[in-house]
Image 1 (cartoon, rainbow, N blue to C red):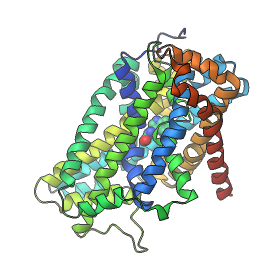
Image 2: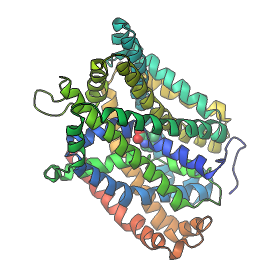
Image 3: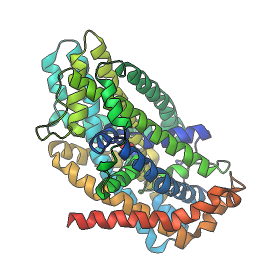
Length: 450
Ligand code: TRP
């Protein structure tokens, strides 16, 4: 398909796309949120439901986004326009809005993770006053500065363009992230107490399963796979016609759930190792300390309780790992509105990235001073926004554009798609099963709110 501007781009290789899309998927959602959701919700029971949500609902929606993206070669707004979407064009605008809003608070949390790498370094060097200053999650200027630093880093990658910016950086960071994660798991599993955490993680407590838990798992699947706002329409628009779309989506889904699983294998044993070192992991009500406290209080306490330099090394490495995972995600969140400005408004990539970075930087800095905004933004644009977008994408694909046209698009790169098992199941998944399940989750979420 024709591209509208020389500032668009194309992935250099299939692996390049998979790394970039997996980088988008793997983020704070996997390493920060997922393990604590598992911990609160019956260990493997949550894991099983989460995997079902990813494969039954997430994967079909991902294929839908990729085929819309590659067919049109456009950002979400341009893509719906190009396919004659009528009112569905609003879904594209909604996606861009969700991207900007999610990025604005995601940058704040990403900024924390980065500042904690410094905090751990200073702590290891005996500079506790410095360490405490960098570790504060309270609102204030330190937060704002790290938020802006993270926005700047994201900007610098995105102005590099699709191949020499996004692809090059994610191709380096993703393997590094995997290696660090595996090494840390190896170390933590030898710590006293860790086997108890492993047992809690891997032994399902099915009594904890409730409808609320299923909704939480579904929301987490959308966020973690980066679905529902057109990030994968955009990344799909940079795919060439030789790529097999369902196969590419399968790799990305597997990479995402694989890293989430590994993150659980690190965090759950680490929590119980912390407990064995005398660190409290349950609050006064007997509930497990939640995600923010878990990653930003319990884990540093564990690192500090370790002898010698190993605590220093683990602490710095862990927060760098989180920062890397966050960066490959903020890149994708920034790329969507940037692609929109390039395609629809003929802007240069650098201009577009500067404009959006300024907007999210200003909102992010404001959020840094008013942390309660995180919850509100998260509720509207993530918990409600992403499933709503996903639902609309399914309905658009199945009933406006039609699955047979999407299949024709997939035949480039996967000639036998119509006769494959995938080709038989996917139209039902995207036209019936996913929309119904998403609609149930959304309605219940909304009813519970009001
Ligand atoms: N998937 C990322 C995570 O797990 C967050 C993210 C990046 C995202 N890009 C996205 C979420 C696009 C929704 C849409 O942390």
